Structures are given as C-alpha cells and as structure tokens.
Amino acid sequence: MNIRPFQPYLFRQDLENVTSPPFDVITKEQEAILKENQYNITHLTLPEAGNPDNSRRVLNKWIGEGTLVKGEENSLIIITQDFRGNGKDFCRIGLIAPVETSPSSGIIMPHEDTFEWAVNERQNLMYRAGCQLEPIFLAIKGVSFERILKSAIKDLLPVRTFEEPTGVINKFFMVSDSSSVNSIVKAISREKAIVADGHHRLKAIQKIFSESGSNQNEFWKYSLAYVTSLQQESLMISGIHRLVSTEYSFGNYRDLLKQYFDFEQAGSTNNLDKITVYDGSYYALTPNDRAFESIGEYGNFRLLSDPSLVNLLIFEKIMGMAIHDIARKIGYTQNVPFAVEEVDKGRCGFAILMPEWDKSTFLSMAEKGRIMPQKSTYFYPKIPSGIAVYCDEID
Image (cartoon, rainbow, N blue to C red; front, side, top):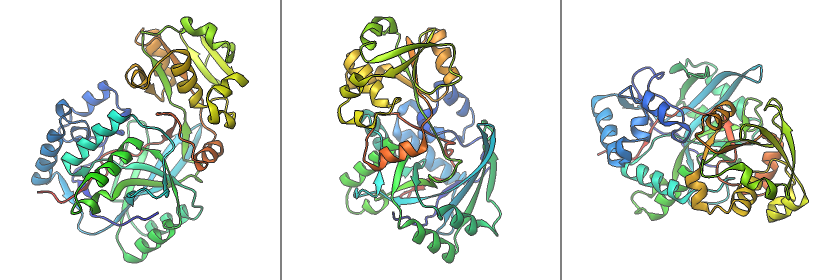
C-alpha cells in the first residue's frame, strides 16, 4: 500500500466545536446542533440545501479568512485516541495520509456493497469542492505498525488535543522529519488494507479518477485515509442495526420467517449474540440449513449473524424488497437503545438488531473477498471529520 506525506488544511481554532462524526452517521438533529457553530465541518460535508457549490463557497471563504490554514511542510498526521469500552481503558493509534487507491489493484479491499445514489452524491460533492473533506477508514494486519507510529511521536508534543462528546480523547501529531516519514512509508508499503469505513467515498474518488482529465488524475489517484492496525485490541467492530419503515409489520412475515429460522423469545438485548427482531417484543433468530442455502455461496460461511441473511433473505426474498426499497425504507443505527426507542415511538415498524463482530471471523471473510451488504459493519471509535482536509489546488 502506498502512502505519501501531504500539506493538509487544518482549522486554526480549537477542534471541540468544529469537528463532527463522519457525515453518514449524523442524525438530522445532530446536524442542526453541529451547524450552530458557523465553522463546523458539517457546513462542508453536508452543505446547505445539499448543493456542493455551497461547500466550495464556504471552503474558499474559510481559507481566505484564515479559518483553514495549509500546513507548511509535507507531513503525516498520527492520532492517538483514549477511550473506555466494555469496561476497559484503551488507547488506539493510527495515521491520516493520502493513500493510493486508483487504479484499483486489489491492495485496498472493500468488504461492503454500495448504493449507487450515495456514491454519486459524494462524487458530485468532492469533485465540485475540489477537496476530500473527511478520511476513509482503512485497517491493516501489520504487527509492527503500532510500534513504528509510537516511535515516530515519542519526542513530539501533540498539535491539538480535544475530547469528543462520547468521551474519546483525541491527540494528533504532525510528523515531518524525513527519517520518521520514510520509516512509516516503508513499513506500510508491504501491507494490504481492508476498507473499514467509507466505501461510498472510496468508490466516488475512484470514479472521479477514472473520469477526470490527466491534469487532475494525480490528486484523485489518492484517497485521504485513516489507517490503523487490526491487531490492536482497541479496534472494535459492532453490527449495524436495521430500522424498517412503518410500511412493514413484522407480524405479516412471521410465518414465512419460521421456514428459515428458529424463533426464541428473548427478554432483552443483554446477550445479543444472534440476529434479533424487536417489534415491542424481542425474537432471537437462529438460521436453519434452508436459510443458509437461500443466500447461495455466502451461506458457506455458516455465520449465524450473517448480514446477507437479513438483506438477501429477509428483505429481498421474504419481504419482496428491491434494492431501491432497501435504500429508501431501511434506516441504520449502531445504537441499540435508539433502535428500540424508534420502534416504541412508532417511527419504524420493527428493528433488526445485529450482534458485535468477532474480529477473526470478519478478517477471514474479508480476506476471502466476501462483499457484504451495505452497512454490515461499524468500526469504532470513528475518526472525527475536520481534523484535516485534503484539497487540490484552490483557485
């Protein structure tokens, strides 16, 4: 995998109020709160009226007035994240840099399918803005990667430290000395990467590369990316829960579902280890042989919580949804209490709750080239948007 140092645009002020979660996990309510700050990155990633020209206009204004300042040296950004999860304290380390992603060579391996409309929306935004506004998320297997990054920052003070509302404390360092940069570039050159998050952004950048003129190809040949190691205990993977439109009632499909799943009524989600439906009551679903046969070659993995059992079997085969129905009538959240609340308040018909991923199982499936349905995994903690912006030449 090829990375290169770059001159990022950085916010001049403190980052607590200008950063945000990645655009695709923000609710409308969160967006409104974030945009109360006139300099929050969501004014770029989710521009006014959905118009990408507004993103470019705001970007030019921020650069012109010195709100965003271009780094003076080619650098790599190294980030540490301190957080608490599952009753333990963790510290994760990774880096932000442009990563060569075009033309596609099998070095960068996606594991999820994409929605065409979402790819086109991101493509239009980034191309019109002339900028990559937030990094995709890549995970590598390298066992020495963590050690090399820690060595590169051992004598450095963080450029910025800020805490997210979730309690994650982020510190980032600018590494520009040639020895450290070359060591990191060399170490990562031997790696392949699995796309943890940002499949739509990656595909959008690759489309821009293939469709743009040769004078622009060098910039779009690379994707701004956050890279960390799969070996770190602090890299966690949860499932993403499905919120089904009120047009659908779970009771209408229960008899059909029983041909493919054994039902077990559960009292709560305290031990969420199977696909679980919530419609006011909890039902844990255990797939039978017929269920695995129905998803074809994907059934060979025999994963009880395989997302294909939800999308291919439940949504498409049993409920008769086409891909555009899934895109418009299914919502997503990584938060179980929120999913339950949406059902209880009548804002969705029922929810399908997905267990945490076993990391070794995920890795085995991804390395075998398995492409899962959209929104199958949720890697966390996320990297906040707004730490760095990667721009082509600004007019």
